[in-house]
Length: 320
Image 1 (cartoon, rainbow, N blue to C red):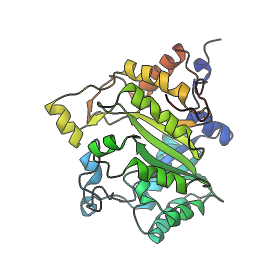
Image 2 (cartoon, helix red, strand yellow; image 1 turned 120 degrees about the vertical axis):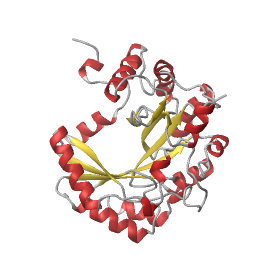
Image 3 (spheres, rainbow, N blue to C red; image 1 turned 180 degrees about the vertical axis):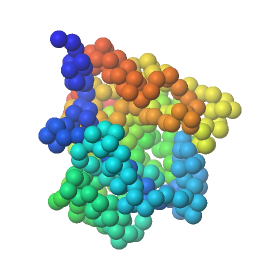
């Protein structure tokens, strides 16, 4: 008979199962689009250099970045997904940099173009951004697509601690995150929140408190959980090479997730459970496995530990 995992049932609500159920078993893939955006924490509006964990290559000046047109990116992405993975339907994913960091009328032109390339087979729009680059006008623009598409707004929370956000040069406080969450209180958008675990000055207890913060907000539908990894070209990478600091091993990270996931509200869908970087860019931690094997290793570890998402969740629970 095998285990539940052998039958495709994970000990948490995972995104693949959600997509399969929502879209009647069709193979749905995200097509990544680079809109040639920058970030207020890079262009001098709020700061320079970006977050210390970011690869500097991802925030080269706009004039130095040569990328295909939106039409070419979508067409090529759809063709690749069909040929390589048998994809049938698509979600257009504006991922690199801050994808609401432009005037609303320009954002509309870009989103409209991307969604029009293969509108018959496009099911959704996903937009990654920062809390401090959203306002009611941009939220209304994104919500205007919800009568035709599922719209996923992905927002980086990273940490719930302002001290951490200052140390990583985030340029955005947790208070700003909460203010934006408040703007999204009754949104039609599917809100996804991104977190990073493993900053060396944060204890396990501090990191487990992220669950309470996420649980408070019913508008949060998805989460992406990442462990801190150090990449070439980042400020943190330079510091790590000079003086290495403690990072999660794969077993330690699995142990942490085994404590975190039971605290997480049971209706939340986990889009991603660990971070990944290209092999040539990754400095540490190198777990020695390709992405698929890391996923399997963590899933098996969670199952063997008897993890069940939400099993320790108590509504409105406050830490002592």
